[in-house]
Length: 96
Image 1: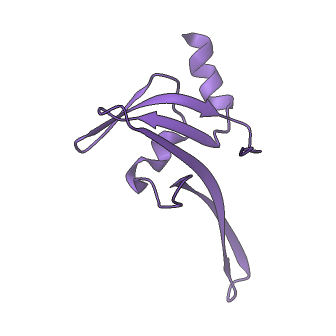
Image 2: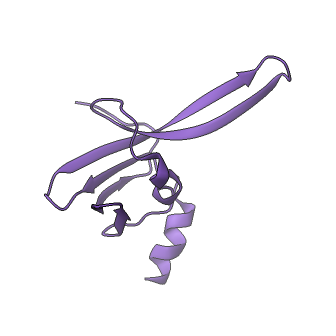
């Protein structure tokens, strides 16, 4: 248990598979987005979580929580309950 809690902070999570109460799987991926402000010449980077199949945004209210999840963790949001099924910490995602 202790090792798992340390491991989640060392991971840089790039892909998650979540399962809802109806056993539907939600495959989501983290993508980096960059905004450049031409007036101040500043670049801001941030990550967004999107569905891998449709590129629609996953619930924005959960983005911070998704950064530190662990396997079998339950995530509750409104009437939804998701269970973390899979974590991919490799930024190179291969599609077949």
